[in-house]
Structure formats: structure tokens, C-alpha cells
Length: 279
Image (cartoon, rainbow, N blue to C red; front, side):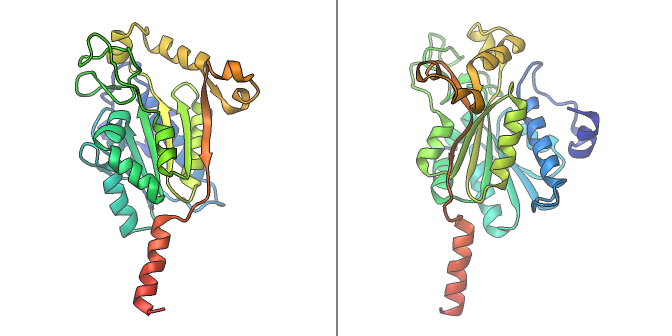
């Protein structure tokens, strides 16, 4: 991350961060900071630092809310979207961004995720998806691939994993996308589009965890795990040019769904006005 960006958007007294060497979370936090920098500097969009709130739950990824120098709140495990919903209802004019992990939002926080998506509440949810519970000891999470090992699955995980972006889309999210720690330019642009979208946005960003997930599953170090993303996760511009057979071997980086539905807090405001005026 450029030095000027660190001094502008990070709480210097909270650094250096505690993420492990090679962790992809710092890359994703940088993408969020760059996306906000570009939007705040754009006079044609209504995004300001003073009216941006960053919310996180518990986990490795959730440390990002403490490092970023915005209005921020570090909440309880799995409840980041619930807290963010309350903030958005109280102050619909705010840009509310949730930074969460795959376990935080799709396990204990799963119901909050699907119902915020169903209601189309104007939040931007960015998942730091590393396929594992990294902070609490390397337990398998709802996104751990079938057969992969974790401290709570020493012989391999037999659950089928969630695709968080598809889960959110199926629940009614009007904007869903997938990024990766390797594809920084594409991921930054997806985050920008998610913030600008008027409705519930979810960008599922594949991180890397060389300490627990990579080591236990012989994935190599951070460099090898990022190289795997380079070789197997394909930006939309290339993905849709591939044959259908080749697509089955790759993972799309890009927008999955983009629809226009009424945003929940705006509709709620209309209801309040109707009740208050009797019309």
C-alpha cells in the first residue's frame, strides 16, 4: 500500500497489523482503501469520508475496521450485518460498509446475511474469504472445500462448501460479485461498483491463509497460493471469451448479479411518511 494512502486512511497508532506474513487480508484492505479514495475524490459521486461507516464482526478480517481511519465499529461474532442494518436504518444517508470473514458472515452470521440480502438493505458487504477460521485456531468454515483439512477436520472436511456470492444472490441480493487477493485492480473496481449500487451489495473476495489453510493442505506459501488464484480465477473479460468446457475449470472474477430492486430503507421512509401524513 502506498505510504500516502496509509497515512491518509489508516490509524497509524494501530500499526503494524497483526496478520500473519503472507496473509491476503492486507491486500483486500488496501483494495477497500483505494476504492474509497477514488470515490471520495470523484466529484460526480456522492461519497464522503465523513458519511462512510465501516463495520466488522470478529475474526482475522474484522481487524481491518480498527486499522482503517473512518467512522468504524468492531462488533460481536456474526453480528456485523445486524449492527450495520441498525446504522443504515437510523441514518439512511450514510454509506455503510461491512468487512467480514467467511465464517463470520456465513456461519454464525448466516441468517443476518440472507435476510439483509432478501430485504435489499443498502449495505456493501465485503468478505475476506480464506476458507478457514484463521484467528481462532484453524477450524474448518462453511467455505472450506470438501476433503480439505483443518484442526477440526484432521481427516478432511466432508461438508459441501458455500459459494457465498451465489448464496447472497439466491437470497435476493441485487449486486453480487467475486474478487481475489491476486486480482487487485478488478477487485477494487468491483468494490467501487458495490458501494455505488443502491441496494444490498456483496463482493466475495478470495483471500489466502498460508498459516493454517495453506500449510495443512499442502498449498505452499503465500506466493504459491496467489499463483493458484492467478491461474484458476479468471476476470470476466477473459472468462466469457473461453469455451464452456474451459469455463468449468475456472472461477469467474467479476459481477455475478446486478439487478435494480427497491432499496429497503427508502421504501421504509415512504411508509413512515404515509403513516405520518395519513395519505
